Length: 272
Image 1 (spheres, rainbow, N blue to C red):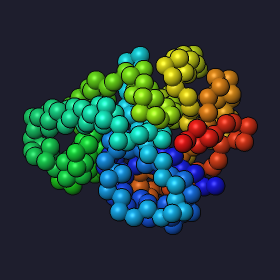
Image 2: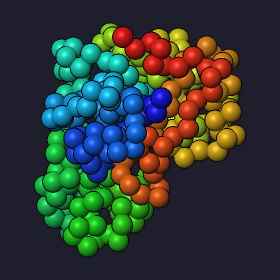
Image 3: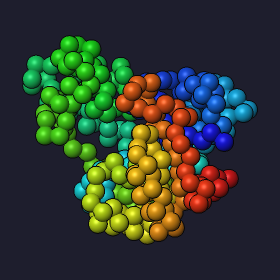
């Protein structure tokens, strides 16, 4: 089966509308898909037509804090009608907007006007720095999104407004209480030392986390082997996904990620 359990739409920082992502999944022969937008499940209400041959797994990618570092946890097979889950996620979206207002004020001091409205054109409601980057490119202040982060939005820059994400333990419990499976997303992307990675995996499991993303976008075989060994050592199920945002050489194509090793129990065995 062609399984992709990590993909984004324009409801967070992807480019395609939800229905367009579904259509692309069908074109690419995907059998099982999860839309895992950052801190929102709004994409699911915008899907008009779901082919019978595609199994859609409700999902989300929650931004959270661990030891004062931002990490991401996937919630797969969550009950997106769970009212506590819905309210908690809405609160995060509201907080993102408040942070956006602060970013806009900081940019205005540099003479960049109307950046909040400009960013919201790209973000709808779930606002993030990538949307400000798109606006800065649009108005000619930056040459590219990377340039926008380098000059205005990246670490230590004027638009680097800190955000108090929920604690990882809270995120895992939220997912579990909504009937989902908590999976640590792209564990090597955080560039932790081996000691810190071990500490994270041990705590993640103690919080109730049950999975680890072994395949995520572009990665080397060495990275895959390391994460496979982590799954075995900590008795975690394995997940895989492209982390697709849009068709670009910097992102893996939807449905084109390799499969996890058959020696690992797959996360989809836990889905209802």
